[in-house]
Amino acid sequence: AQTVTQSQPEMSVQEAETVTLSCTYDTSESDYYLFWYKQPPSRQMILVIRQEAYKQQNATENRFSVNFQKAAKSFSLKISDSQLGDAAMYFCAYRINQAGTALIFGKGTTLSVSS
Amino acid sequence: SAVISQKPSRDICQRGTSLTIQCQVDSQVTMMFWYRQQPGQSLTLIATANQGSEATYESGFVIDKFPISRPNLTFSTLTVSNMSPEDSSIYLCSAETGWNTIYFGEGSWLTVV
Image 1 (cartoon, each protein chain N blue to C red):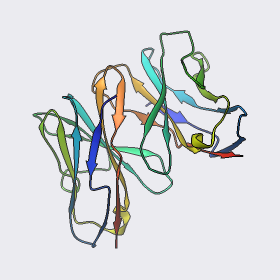
Image 2: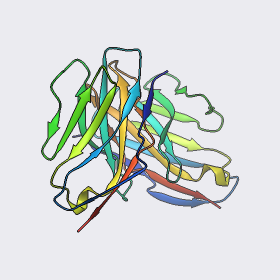
Image 3: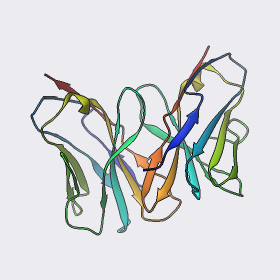
Image 4: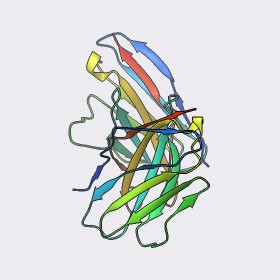
C-alpha cells in the first residue's frame, strides 16, 4: 500500500525567508504523481505544485519549488521569500498515474509566518 | 482552473438527522471524490463516484451511512445519515478536471450536536 509521511507537524518562518517542508512516500509503482496542496484557514484546498515521477527536472511555480529524489522517495517543498499569506496547512499527496484514482495524503504540516 | 462549488458551506445538525452535501463542477468530469477531514487531521477518502455507476467506498465507510449520488457529469451529492457527534468534520468533494489535475470544493463544515 502506498503511504505518505510528513514528519514535521509544525514549521515556522519569518517573512522573506526560505522554508523547506519535508515529505517521504512509499510505493512500489514507477509511474505516479506527487503534489503539494495548501489549506489556509478558509479550508479551501489549493494545488501548489505537481511533479511527475518520470520527470527528473524539479517542478517550480514562482516562489515554490520541489526537491524530488525518486530513489530516496523524497519530495520536499521549498518556499522562497515567504509571505504572510503562505501561512496554512500544507499537505503532500501521492497518486498513481491512472485516471480515476484518488489522492493519498500525508498528515500535513502547519506553516506559520511571522513578520 | 475548474470551479467546484459545495453547499452548504457550514451547518449545525441535530444528532440522528441526515444532511445532504451538494457538489457542482463547472465542467464535465468523469470521476468525483469525497473526502472527510476531521478537526486538525488529514483528508481521508470516503468514496469515488463515477457517473452512471455506484460509488466505490473505502474501508470503514459504507453506503448506508454515506449514500452518494452522481446523476450527471457535473454534479454529485453526499449524504451523511443518522449523524452523531463523531461525524463532525469537514467534507470535501474533488474532481479530476484534467490529466492529474485535481481540484477541490470549498468544503462543508458540519457540526453535530
